Amino acid sequence: MQTIAAFVLPLIIVMIPLYGLIRKVQVYEVFVDGAKEGFQIGVRIIPYLVAILFAIGMFRESGAMDFFMAALGPVLGLVGFPVEVLPMAIFRPLTGSGSVGILADMVAAYGEDSLFVKMAATMFGSTETTFYVLAVYFGAVGIRRVKYAVQTGLIADLAGIIASVVIVYLLFG
Amino acid sequence: MLNYIWAGLIIISLIFAIGHDVRDIAQNTYRNGEIHDISIYFPDNGDPDRRQNVQFRIAGHDGRFDAAWRPVDDSYEMVISVDDDMPDHWLSIAEFQETSTSTEILAEVVSFDRIEATGGVLLPKVRYVKLRAITTAAFDMAEFAVTLAIGLIGVMALWLGLMKVAEKSGLVYIIVRFVQPFLRFLFPNVPKNHPAHGIISLNMAANMLGLGNAATPLGIKAMEELQKLNPNRDKASNAQCMLLTVNTASVQLLPPATLVALIGTGVNELVIAMALATLISLIVGITAAKIYEQYHPEDPHSDNIPDEQKIEV
Image (cartoon, rainbow over all chains, first blue to last red; front, side):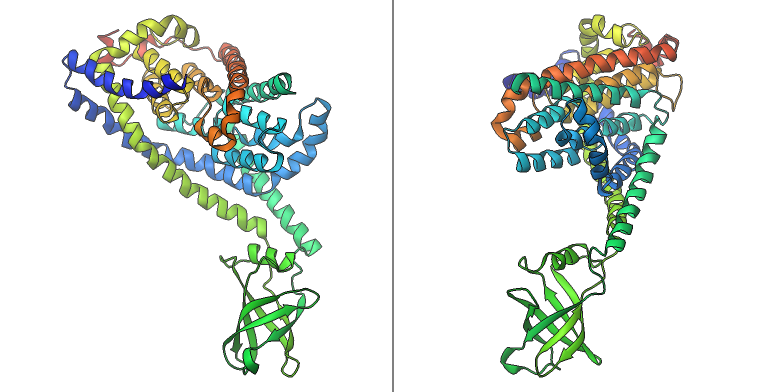
């Protein structure tokens, strides 16, 4: 698998212009024409990213997380969801760098081989930073009314989070 | 929904920050206004009315610490170098004081006995720690957002250029033919043989292989293709919502590099767990999106194909 991944990118990057040459496309000119858009898109997503990231940054610093852990811990304990992985479950959809930090803290606190770290790592690897994806993807095309995309993204995240806990329990617990 | 979540994050932050700071003030966490007794050691009986480096001992605490002694007007002040052996609340004052540095504390000498070389110092007041923290976070993240977006420009340009070549040469349409049977189910409103199918499939493939710096530009490109078909300029179409859902569920068959860096080779035994979890989240996400689609009926996009793509279709 890793071998495939290592070959895929260089192969794609070489294959596309090569095929273009065979089909007699002015590859350089067309490439530059397409690449022009990169800058506009980068600039276009800025307001969306600023809006999402500053709100999440404030939330992260406000200490609200400690409160939610204390409040939700007993409830989650009833269904067998370990409260130790709750920060990861909440922050994974919000911030990529934040959840990396949480995972690093957990490795330091519980050790690499602990069940909690395995759960958190599985969550990290199996879900995406939903709000970042939302800001970037929709921002790039200027969409502000996102309809039900937040809900479906979060439902998918929730399923991934619950699945991570259950699967790690079954495989290692 | 996004409006409420967004505003909710900001309002909750403010409420919790204020709550935290009020509790700090009520419990006097930082012991503001308390006078700490210290004894000062001047080098070789130096004159206290001169600027000099001194050492001092905090009453009831072992160890000598360094400070710069400064006469000001009628009294004195000390610039204390923070030392890890200091009492805990001195350290937290250093960390949370309003001045940006956490290695020095500026203390006011409120009483000083020349003969005994003892005195009382007043440490800076620490207040509104969390309020300051969320404000700093807001500004820092706003700045970071721009860095992030600017950083995307290069890879964006690379992939957009390549995709343009792939489109002009007809390569995308070859891919479309292969993946269409699968993608027609997810994106029923995208017209047959439309290049969006090809780019969406490349985006999914990049996600599966954990190629983050290819997946995002390809996803954006796919989003653009869908936007060309979208009759509403600022409202997402069902197809765009589906693409976003598939991307947030992020089908990954390879662990992301950050994870390998954090927990090392232990990540290998988690590959199956991650693949299963991601598959479940994908299935649930797609199902949810399909259910939502029922409540947001939409016409097929065949009328909105832009002219330059009509010939190929």
